[in-house]
Image (tube, rainbow, N blue to C red):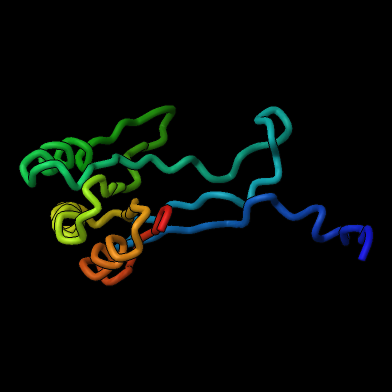
Length: 140
């Protein structure tokens, strides 16, 4: 009913809570940062790098995208950098096409997945393929 001052713990809390996405020993974390600019302190979690494939691509096209991405890594200042996972986007809004694309990606890689669709039934078809493990849902 009016102004309620934030408790110190609320005002000091990070604006985005920690989100962890993990599958088969691969883990990506985001959030829980309290700095806005790099010079203020440091960021604790590196940004996750995901390669997006679409369900309107053929199985061969998806595999051609996945093979080099899965094998990619580079050493930068003594740190091994690699892609963190794959995102599968539904552009067809067809649950069976989306499930097939998710199945192809899941067969090639054990890394975390992001499933992208505005339609809940399309997302449900993709989640059935991976049993919901190591998967983030976007936009449904």
